[in-house]
Length: 179
Image 1 (spheres, rainbow, N blue to C red):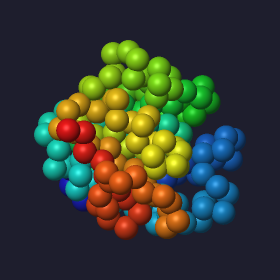
Image 2 (image 1 turned 120 degrees about the horizontal axis):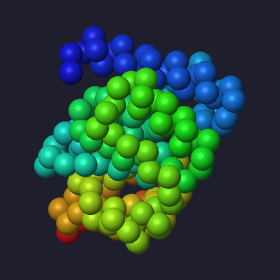
Image 3 (image 1 turned 30 degrees about the vertical axis):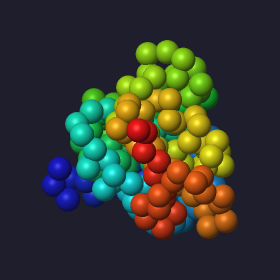
Image 4 (image 1 turned 90 degrees about the vertical axis):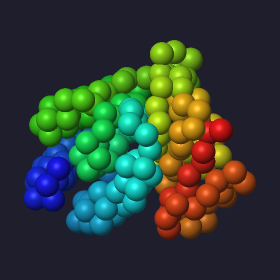
């Protein structure tokens, strides 16, 4: 995708987030003035991991407002599943996929444990989690969804307790490989 196209689509997504956040809790109100820096640019820190993975589907676990899944889908051109059990947030994600023309992406309305017990187990090369749970718990929810040789990318805060099998991929981002 051309940089101008990516910028246009990220701006459209940012506007969707602003608009829908007035009705449902997608991002903190204090973050609305800094959506790009705090959420979109932060989400794109996982792009090198996504683009380095073999071709195949990725999944954003507990997608909520589509972070980091939608920015990564826009930037990478890969198929993504946005896993979100809450009805209103899933409706927002469906609208994002329609408006942003992410035809090779889908919203899956179920929990991570439901997904891991069904057809999505081991079906992804990369799983992401941002604001899902503490790192060890997020890893436990994501790893069953990743194929052997794949990786989980977890966004973490400065004071987060990092699992021993994790590697820092970038400031605020850890990865765990599934061997």
